[in-house]
Image (cartoon, one colour):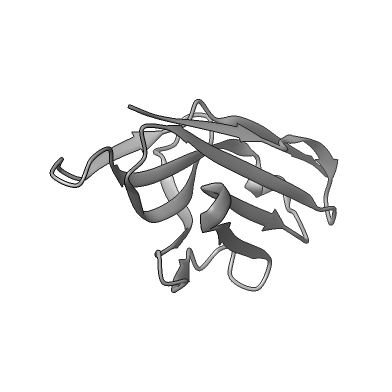
Length: 121
């Protein structure tokens, strides 16, 4: 099993910044793409950003130029730097990864419990 634990959420004023972290632990043989998703009240969960194991990134249009995703493969950790925050960024942010627990096991999708980001106007 793989566990993902997010941290770094909180309440911030519009224009402010936060840095989210997500640490993976457990029986990890290999991790592929790591990503951040968010879900606002009454809305579907949506992709915010993701980063492949080779460092290639992609972002939702709504966060391009404001958010930056990075990863530390040695620490099995992915980060999301959130700058120039807007009230519409308010949501629960979830970490996600695709991982294998052994060489012969299939790739499986794992989710963290989520961390709340609230942006006041």
